[in-house]
Image (cartoon, helix red, strand yellow):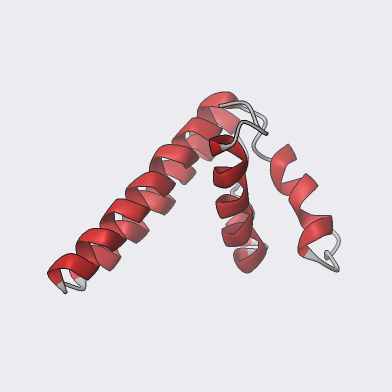
Length: 100
């Protein structure tokens, strides 16, 4: 896989790795739980919520990839672009740009 010069180049690849609707839905649930965990962490000032956020975010996404999409998460090759891609895909699903 070639390197991407920008996130703009990476994002179509990222979406192609999330063609399965169940995988996308699991990403959405995981990202929603990440937000909830971070809110709880701030409210309680308990850093264990950061661990919960990581487990929710990566856990749901990786289940989606390994069992439904049947590919390796882009996180393994492109960790920063992948993280950004997850948040952009989440926003695109919220506004209806990508089918939920």
